[in-house]
Image 1 (cartoon, rainbow, N blue to C red):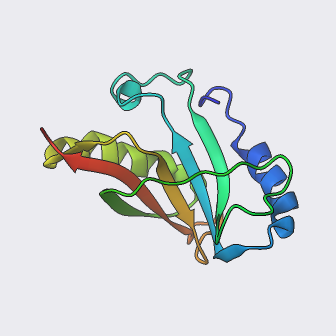
Image 2 (cartoon, rainbow, N blue to C red; image 1 turned 90 degrees about the vertical axis):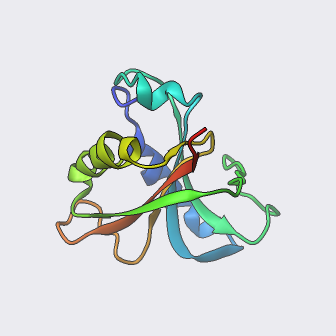
Amino acid sequence: MSLITNKTQSLWQSFMMEKKTIKNAVGTDLYSIQVYDSLDYHKSFKPQTEFTKHAAIEVTNFNNIPNGFSSLILKSGLYAVFLHKGPASSFSNTIQFIFGDWLPKSTFELDERPHFEILGKKYKNDCPDSEEEVWIPIRIKT
């Protein structure tokens, strides 16, 4: 997927229809996970640049994964965590702050691990009082 060919809505609709078949879920938090092919994705960003997006929920193990689902293990490491407050439609403002302001001024650089958002109890999609955590993989600048 890319931002031009954004299929996020259909991905989540499909996931939510099948979510009830996951018998070993841990909690109710949902995870929106992005996997980028390289660290250059954000440096040379173009709306047509492809990436992989996952709609996910944490599970105790990978036994009994429903058909059409796959497993993904997030590698541990250092993450910068931000809180996005507001509708999903204003999420680009949070991303602009992270990559255009915070990251360049910090002592960190991106690490090659998935980026993700935790859509917890306060997540309300496009409502003004919605909240979600934004997790960005980082490492100390070399």
